[in-house]
Image (cartoon, protein in one colour):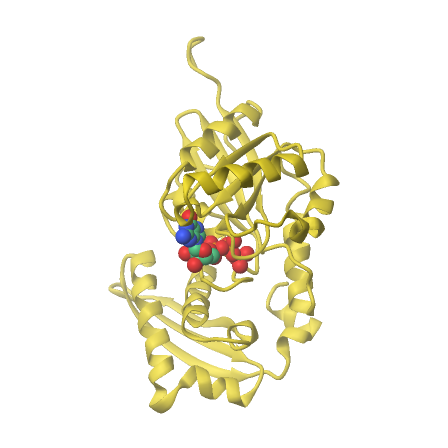
Length: 297
Ligand SMILES: Nc1nc2c(ncn2[C@@H]2O[C@H](COP(=O)(O)OP(=O)(O)OP(=O)(O)O)[C@@H](O)[C@H]2O)c(=O)[nH]1
Ligand SMILES: [Mg+2]
């Protein structure tokens, strides 16, 4: 490095906030590729998902996390634990809300938690494409009063509006240091894991009420052949009625989920994919710690 070149800034950044505000969307936008699934339903993300963003003079390791909420089931308790646990070893916290969170009182649980940390916190107000500029100002004024954020940025993760400023703000905070990961690695999660998540995303997008929340996906086979990848996966549900819904009339729903997932998986892997899906009832798996441990929670 010559003396005139700026030093590399490196750090780990936790991306936290209530469910459904657009955390995973932001991670994908910043990365320029999809590593974390997105749906219009809360509690989509169940794990900590790393996205490593490299610039000429920085490497930021973002941790996408499950939405923090008042958890009411063993699975949700584990998800919130994962989100809270991610705050420990980071250099900065990006706390996201969206423009529909007008009442800060609703966020007291999350506020309490954030007050426990002494790390710098940047507040992102996402989905600004949904409101007028005039409506944004009172929102900023409200949030300014509730917590001493290091910076407050209105953004649209979906439209990639303001996302560069997130990087600029983090560059002011993060310390100088060597890159932690090689520059060609976008995430720490395996292709197998992303494949199971893509299938889960299609279930979240296609089904309603308790069905997506009673579903988990396990990859049984992932075999790479010269011109294609063969994938077998089992969709776990909790009841026979849910199995019926996922399969649909004459198998139409399962076919749709499979086709949508296969197209995304082919894009991810850059090759033809043969995807076979099975649906299995595992009674109350999301309420049993043994089942959750089997799934890696
Ligand atoms: N209009 C608008 N919608 C957005 C924006 N960002 C995300 N969304 C939508 O908001 C919904 C939730 O997005 P996610 O990225 O899954 O949200 P999340 O915070 O990761 O949610 P959990 O994983 O459940 O905690 C999806 O329907 C997104 O398409 C945005 O900037 N504008
Ligand atoms: Mg998410």
